[in-house]
Length: 128
Image (cartoon, rainbow, N blue to C red; front, side):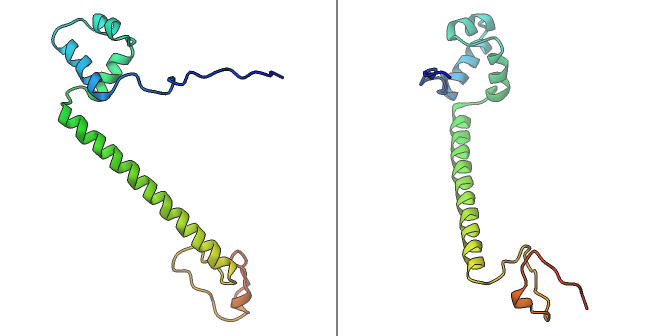
């Protein structure tokens, strides 16, 4: 068993170039500068350049600002949906603990007779 853990570089997950810098790098190649020179001077790999070009090619700074705003709004909405799902699950658990059966599907109605109040949601009785 190892008694040491490999150290992680704190900047390993940080992106080295902002979208604005990426657009500026792409513009350098569009102005006629060779791609190999741009890659070497900006310290990016030759595989990164076409990926950036497909993702950011033809974008203006206003487009980047709009994209950033949409990404922020999307992240906020995802958090909101996750909070609502969690809230619904808690309500279902609380409702189930109070002795009331939790409907597994929306609109499900209990059949009358045969002690429907004591029936477990997962069990079914034969029809008579």
